[in-house]
Length: 178
Image (tube, rainbow, N blue to C red; front, side):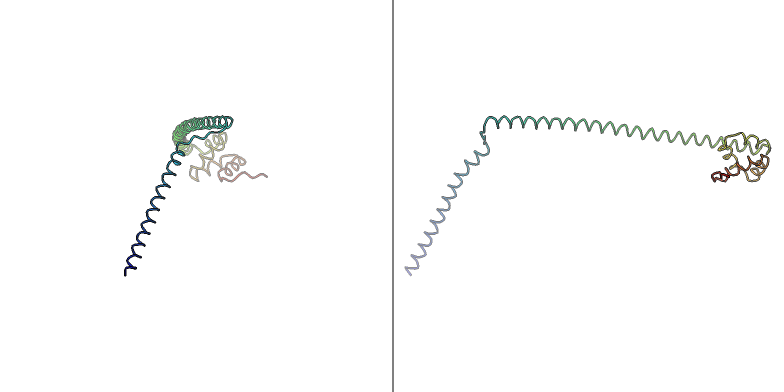
């Protein structure tokens, strides 16, 4: 039993020695690497004057390029803002033009209706004479809004070749070449 007791104590002492050596090695490692990392953080490397000058010029060139890029980016943002403002103005102008065209179209439709009413009250021969001398599209617009019996009376009052051309235009088909 004394041998077992001595063996246990010897193992404990050896274990304590190993732990002590580990702690000493750790302190040594920390004390050696700490100054190295401190040197690396405040590191200033020395190099030849030519390389140093080149690096300094390259740094200045990069900084200049960065400033140019920032300037161009600001300029592009300004152009983008102006373009957006112009696009909005054009959209508003386009809407205004469309509204005015719609009003003009409505006015023209009202005027055509007045003409249709006037031609419907005319005698067929008088209406035929005026429609022959009128722009063909306008004549077709007026005739297309009259009642079919009124159109028949007016076309019969026209010379046959004019009545045929007018009837052809009323049909909506392109004129045939004979």
